[in-house]
Image 1 (cartoon, one colour):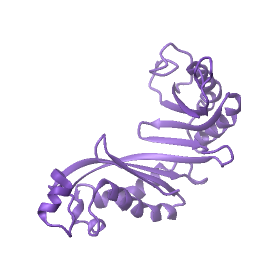
Image 2: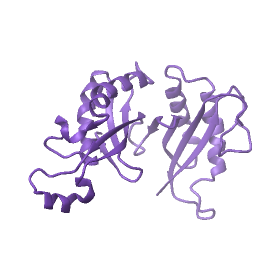
Image 3: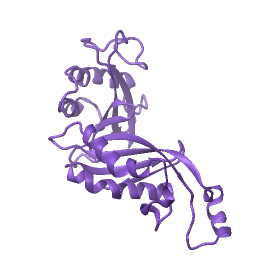
Image 4: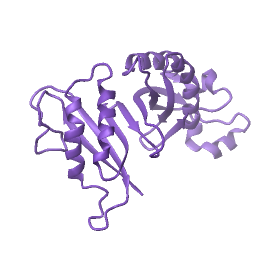
Length: 253
């Protein structure tokens, strides 16, 4: 089986039809200040023996025009986004292969995702928000001497800094369908206020383990899971990137 993903971009400006010539920039063409939403549609299936496509990309776009765009025109207040996604997912029966995921990127750093791992498993809705913080650290094994630490960690044994990106994935509650305000408050209070512009090795979180990106992701999950649960938000994943090439992810189920 192959999973194929297509991104369809829509400008939500009150236009009735998502027509236009530049699908890469988004349809309809920009004529005024208006929000843009990216819809990521993922199908799972075997490529056709003649075309060798799972689905022609034009068919993706046509399906999205009919089953996603009309719902987005209704706006983004309350649970409108979630309703739009569920309605679109139900229309996946019109596609020739299994619809496994539908993601709506409301901004480059915030997105809803509705997905089903297997045909028999229930749909799962998640909300992702990205944050950033700057911190210094060095990698050092307390039980080893300087020579051994230099051997283990090279340049990273010396103190240096990163501009980290933190991606938090949660299951929103029925009473808080777009939980950005709650999520921002919890992440700021329980993580950013503690870690931002600090030397991580000096913090209690990293007295037993060094602040490698793997351990930073684990400690972030420990810090956020309880406070989010107290707000009726289930933490599903934490991802921490220390550069554009290195990241660590913790999945909590």
